Image (cartoon, rainbow, N blue to C red; front, side, top):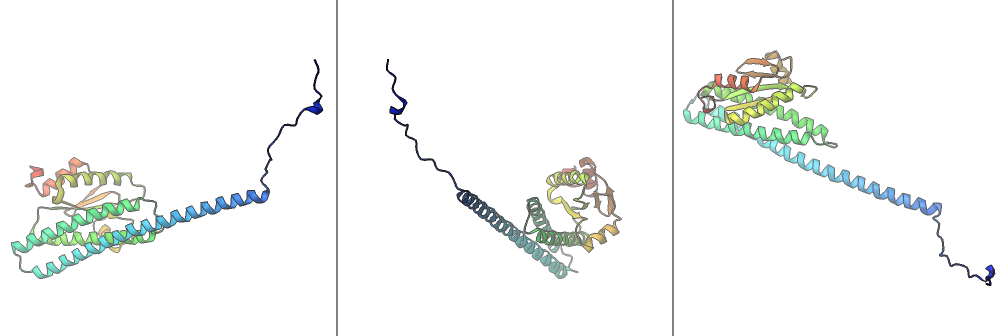
Length: 246
């Protein structure tokens, strides 16, 4: 058998090999970096737009509530001294609606604050301070109307802290449950003691508020977590004639 000489074998064809030069590699990295940077800034821009849109809506609601409270103050001045049933019925209804607006606003503000706020943190703090002032003003008006007109409504001042207070979360949940039970018969005014407000400090001094949480019902102070059953009893002792207490 005759073996073919290696020299007669045809060389195997190989495709051209391409190697990336350092300059080409650098261009790829640079393009990737630029794209990543564009996506990052685009995300920040969209996030800023969403935050400002939500904040703008909250500010509009604050203005609306503030206008409602100013109207109540004017109506109180107008009806002062008249003491008619019609005026009292009207004022109670206006305060009820304003309190409901404050409840809705509080939920929306809380949901907004729980987001990873990057660009509007200072404005949110200002909004919380304004909301607290509106709450206190609404509470004062409610107490004034209760004195002048009488009302089957229980007002609860709820002092709490957002800093390391697990009991405050528990008490807040209990008040939320009772609000669902008693509805418009229960008005809760939650006051964050961490808000920089002179009126919060004045009320804390008036009721000698120290431990958190603390609630005040009809000038009576209750410290620590008050259970649903205990608080229901307190509410019903104030307005025993309502359906929920019979």
